Amino acid sequence: MSLVFEPQQKLLFIGDSITDCGRRAEPFAPYGSGYVNIARALLLARYPERGLEVVNRGIGGNTVRDLDRRWEEDVVAEQPDWLSVKIGINDVWRTVSGRLDEAVPLDEYRATYRRLLERARAGTSARLILMDPYVIAPPVGEPGGAAGMSLADAQRRYPELRQQNIASGPEFDAVMVHFRTLMDEYIAAVGELAADFDALHVPTQAAFDAAIRHQPPMFWAADRVHPGAPGHAVIARAFLRAVGYGDV
Image (tube, rainbow, N blue to C red; front, top):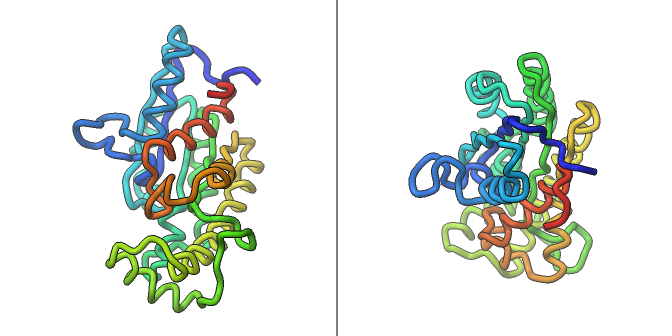
């Protein structure tokens, strides 16, 4: 598979804090310091003759509800040739953290995401790239997981652990089991949408599952969500493989 991007095309990324990564203020404006910046740098280094334009429209804390509110301005008005969407972490995280009024149930997530893609298809000529949301925690049932805590207990205990800056130990690991269990359902929904819309699909969760076979989750992200530079490189590598860049 060769690189999918043609000369002079515009690639727009939209999502939450993982995409945002400081792109709205100096010193990291306008691309952020995360996977978008890494992917852009490598694309321009290998394919300078293609004159690709990269736009970052990530905003920290966003769910699909937030994307719905800003879709016309941040996607349709931009008229990208390629649209990369990575959304879902906050939709799930707010369930696990007990913020149920802000959480986005799976059915709403799927329906809203589908509506956004339909609006992109109707209002632009963009090809689609759907990136899986993720949590950097072992697949449920594999070594490194934990059990023995109900979801209700996790929703009560998780905010307390975060307030105390505790991101390891049996209780935290038990919370992550619920996080990963729910996340896998949202990841499956993204895979279904990618198939329905003939989109390129970036298996971000699978990339982190491979990474944690060699270094523990905390190496990639202390809170299991917001990665450091190596974790953002994992995401960028998964993206670049999906778009035909080749290995990096």
